[in-house]
Length: 78
Image 1 (cartoon, rainbow, N blue to C red):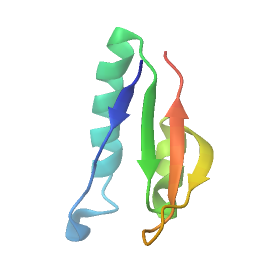
Image 2 (tube, rainbow, N blue to C red; image 1 turned 180 degrees about the horizontal axis):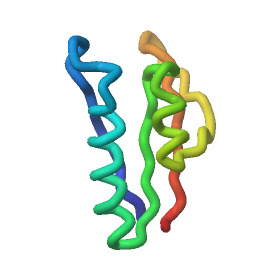
Image 3 (spheres, rainbow, N blue to C red; image 1 turned 45 degrees about the vertical axis):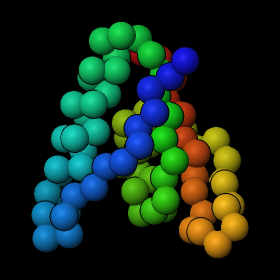
Image 4 (spheres, rainbow, N blue to C red; image 1 turned 135 degrees about the vertical axis):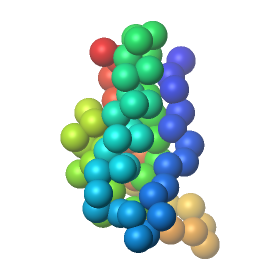
């Protein structure tokens, strides 16, 4: 079992202010309280460093037909 982080976004005028990191950090603290791993699919390679700072590790690229590539990322339980 794991938590699946489905969707996270910051409105473009507010990007680069640390809001995405704050949202992710708050979410991961809750996940860590129950000691579960977390999984997400990253559709924007620019976001990879944010997720890596949160402890996520890229697993593989998913190449859905007629859709942008996705990077599956897993964070072990803490």
